[in-house]
Image (cartoon, rainbow, N blue to C red; front, top):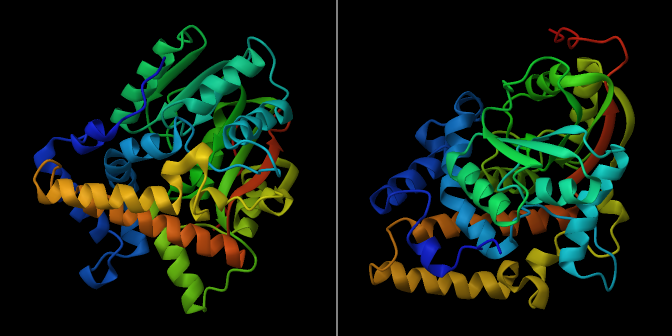
Length: 351
């Protein structure tokens, strides 16, 4: 069976040398501190550093709290949390009409949890792309442990410049990943390039909703809290996402916020005070984890910077819950689009 990081691996900071944790954590947080001269423009220009620093620091905490699928899901009353996560992944496979033997790209695959689930469910061959070396290493281990190396492959690469020939894939999907891209036209046009004509791209996208008011200070604080806590250069609105998909040349088949179709609020795993199926991600779990890392860092049993890392993850959780309750943010703006038959390259970007 695949291993989930325990407390010892988090404290030993499996992705970084112990002496580097404090520096990386400090530099990462500075990217979101405009008093130190960093702006949204700088975050976009340095998005690879921002995102890689975030996942170097956060990956083991994610696996510890969430398992191998780092995403939210619609949830029905009485439905176990893990079942909801799997169903959310299966829904993508069904909407993409995946068949056995299809060549599929998972754009921003994390440690490969969804790729392995979708491969098992559909019979497709899934290639995951991820620019974080530590996550690629974790994905390879999990995939080998689960006996799926003939069906799932994870490569290190930048999804803004996918290492594949034009019209390579029968389908492309992204689960809460392309929010890390500095430019929506850039990521969607690159996906358009590698997708075969007539085939589909589907995603769950993190977005600010049409209820977001950029002049509202509370809304702005929620947006920045999510961006800082989750390694995102700039969150787009749902309207902007659809506009860019059309600008690139995709035919939009479906686009809607699935958060409004969930019987149980999507943020419940973060907001609930007690959740046996996912206790580590709840307020109670975060509280005890925070006490633990504080004590162990004080005793020098955990590297300096561990507490600061957990601090910005807590801030992210609080901002996500607040954004969900106000309905100004969604982690599941769902869309399915198709590359037209005969199309090769994306339409030129509008000036």
